[in-house]
Image (cartoon, rainbow, N blue to C red; front, side, top):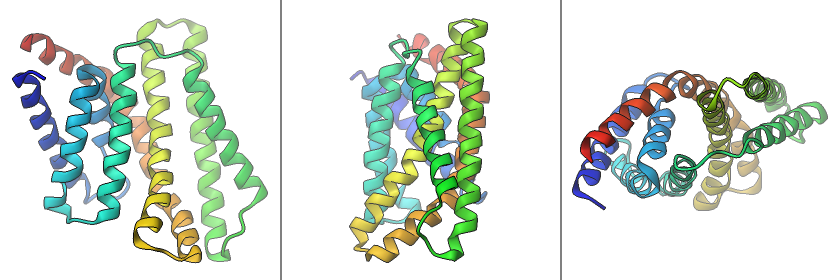
Length: 233
């Protein structure tokens, strides 16, 4: 890896930490996803993995060292960098994003309609959030299909693709947390179940924020990062 790439990784790591710290005072709002997504998309897998590793570890200096959170970040952001670093150099399959969104929407609707064997304290909130997640997934799916049918060009399909994948990844982050945290902290089955369902409270606003921020900021950030990368070559 070139020295200039290491500098880019260091600057992006500092930016991600600063943004997460600043946005930490606003519940449900985060811009780390769109920044890191755009960075990985332009600079590739190697830079993405290095930045994700540095971000996951160095953020502990501000937020404290919690083994479950460190493990969650290391696993999630490594997979995130692999996904978007890989896709940035290749065309996204036209069926990948709608398939993932359709599965997410179907699963949300199924569990919202059939109900979940949980405490009555959580039933109403979880059901409402599942229906909202279903609506978000369906809306982005329809948006993606409309862009493809309308043949708005490669850029339009690219924007729809990364927005859809950002939504899926945001949901995956919460689900991964629901597995890692109970295992690392040794939760009982009842505590793990409660932790799983209360995770929806944080997931919903984060999912909406990820969808909106990626849709609005991805193309400008991609252009800016591309210009920086080109100037450094």
